Image (cartoon, rainbow, N blue to C red; front, side):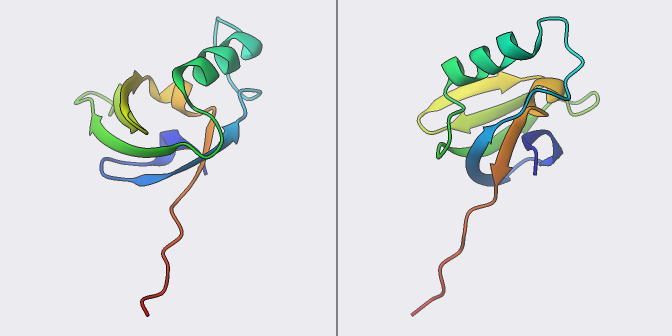
Length: 89
């Protein structure tokens, strides 16, 4: 699943980055580097806080203890997994 497919209130964990399908002017390697530097590393917890009014772009993400704004096309490169819910005892 990709972060760009999620809506406001969605939570989960970052599984990795795959920018190979991006059609971005900065290049695949540069986009991956920037996302990693922002904190989109494997295991980081996130929550989608806000979506823009026009085209739901940009999106605001709570990433661990930080707030980050991304374009949907950048969020397309971030692979995520919804949190696993533990069974109640």
